Length: 450
Image 1 (cartoon, one colour):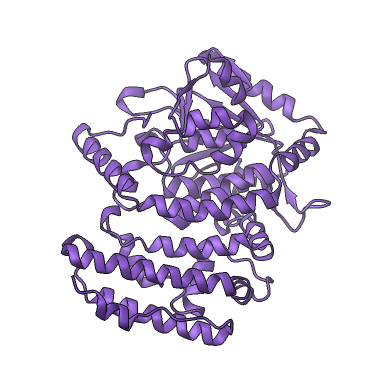
Image 2 (cartoon, rainbow, N blue to C red):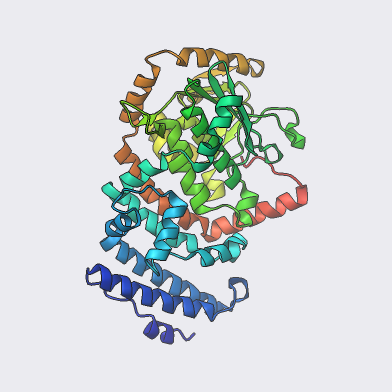
């Protein structure tokens, strides 16, 4: 197995601490690695020795990129944001990094090429993006600025805001949002896949959350699943079946636009609100949220419950975080479930795959009300009325500050950023999603993952 030529040609640089010199050395080393990889067949066609060589080259480059970021992450971020005067979102930021600092992260063409491949056939360039975001989020100044930037409304939401204010109802692909008696009802309608989360649903959800928060006629937000067309649940409401494992197997789940954006954008806004220039005396507009669970809240669905202020569950519903089965990290559940329910229950659910039924005593650590399935709608209306109280927003803000300080969230998010990307490309996840994809092709529909 001849790997010595690669080692001699791509010997890692020794960084001096000089930004210009280190940037140039990084660019040279990364370009050499690109040339080596370009000379190999596509991943599925590589021989064992070629696979070894590719993994070695990719791993070495990641070590080099990580070393560079440990020295220069704050300076890089400062340059990309014009001294923190600009507020790029995740995808814009990492794309700008590829342009401004060659070799620091994969470029647009490289990412586009991987985007069209099945997960098992990718070289895992999203791990290199994760190294960048881990370094940025680990910095108090850069990470704090990025979290603040991600609380700003999306361009899509701003473009729809006038129409939403006028009509009070919009269909956003996989979700419908309606203003009813001063509440914004967000109804997930990705019914073909039991409201499984994918890139589209994350985008639609964040857009709807922005619209609800920016609308002065909305006092409370409501999250609920719509009625399904799925054969096993036809006509029934379902909250969420977690991440779409078929899309994950086929390489259609984006690390930046789904897995990281979801946590720093949509879900963070449920807790902290949306940044608005009109907000005063606070920097954000935040509102209480009700979540109503029919049937089940799996994976990302259960994670949404941990960000809500009042959770209603049908008596026959259940909650689960099947991280052990899926092999990935369940968002911020390790942070929030531990805070709400304690470390022991968090371990049982996340590590052991425990499913919690709404009727169990431990379910009261996750939901506030358990009602007959026919009474969920009535319970939602009553909860909305209670949460309209004038002191609710101030007190929920203080509870959230005590329960999840921004600095604590930022440090957790920094480690999550890398751990999740590593799990995405781990052999066990590739194998599990492959089996799920085969099952889906045979059965012709998506099943709950737990």
